[in-house]
Image 1: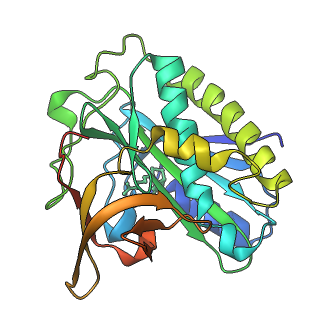
Image 2: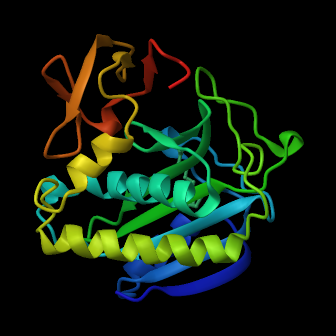
Length: 250
Ligand code: BTN
């Protein structure tokens, strides 16, 4: 698939823009990339700070024709692409905290927000802090991870445009493989790629569920629906308010 990139200087949220376009019938492949977002959205109803030039703030419109149970793997696919991309293109070592927080030196450098229209389309939104300075970093969310950027982690000369193009190439290829395998994480090689970059597996975790209930146990793997398996119990990304690990420097 060829992505069609629409660059805008400023918008509220590129995810919102892509969802609107999807509902108006736009075919898959549209990418909206913003210089800055005034109402960037994060997971769990959080906001996402997106100052001008500080990072890549973009969303991709996808219409994944895979069984609904496999859709949970789509944001994980984006996470793997991002982790490999940041390592290869910016020379920065990155891992994922399940489901798809991109961590560099134990700090959050990128986040992914997938939102569905309910009509088969998904806005896959990626926020990657590339050039944010220490002063521009947002405060860490309550009991969340402290933020960082590629530049703060030592990457030099980060070119936002070149990085976007290269990341989109990689995303197109990983998405095509996954779709060709009918969304099967095994057959597409996605599960092993994900487990290779996910630092949560093997750790003792404490998941706070909506309503405050707490689940403690060892994270052992990710199941066929992209859920984290904790002591044999599968938990979906949307069912967790906080995920803490014993090793905070993961
Ligand atoms: C997270 O909370 O970790 C997810 C953050 C996702 C932010 C990106 S920036 C581009 C896209 N547009 C949005 O409004 N949010 C996503």
